[in-house]
Length: 246
Image (cartoon, rainbow, N blue to C red):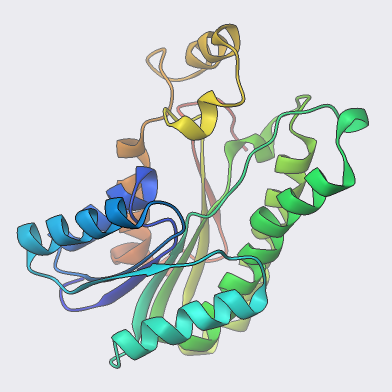
C-alpha cells in the first residue's frame, strides 16, 4: 500500500478514522472526506502526517447528490494527480422507527445517504480509480436479520449489496475489485443514539465473547480487501461475531 492513494468518506473519526490511521501506517496517502467539525478533522490530518509522513488532504462537504460525489472525486484527483487506488465509503445514517410512524421526509433522508450516495460513490470510483483499484462500501449485518424497526436502514443498505455485485462485473476489465463489509452492532455513537440499554445488552449476548463489534474488528478486513484480498470481488463480508450470518 506504500505510495498508493486512498479516498475515504467519513474518514476522520470512528471507523473511517481508524481505517485512515491503519492505511497511513502502511504508507498510503490519504484524501479524507468529512462533514462535521473542521478543527477536529484538521487536527486528525496533522497528527497522521506527523506520525506517518504520508500526504493527507481533508475535504469538507455534504454528500447530498451525485454532483457532490463527482466534485469530491475531482478534488481527490486534483490533490493526487497520480490517481486514486482505493475508495472506501463509510457514509451512513441510521433510523430505528416503525414503518407506520416513518414520514416521507425521514425515508427520503435515509434513502439519500444510505442508497443514492452509495450508488454514485461506486459509480465515480469505477470511473476514476486506477487500474487494479479497490472499492469497499460499509453496509450492515442487519441485512441478514429478521427484525423490526430498521426497515428503512435495512432496505436502503440492501441496494448497496446489489450495486456491489453489478459493479464487480462491470469494472472487471479494469481489474477493480468491489466489495462490501457488513459489521454487526458497533460500539460507536452511531448505535447508541438509536438503542436502549436493554437492547444494547441483548446485542452483546448475540456476539462472540458477549460483546459488540469493535472498530478494531473491521479495519483489518477493509485493509485485507484493499491489499492481498483483491481476488475477492462482488461479495458482502459479514463481520458480526455471529450476530447475524448468511
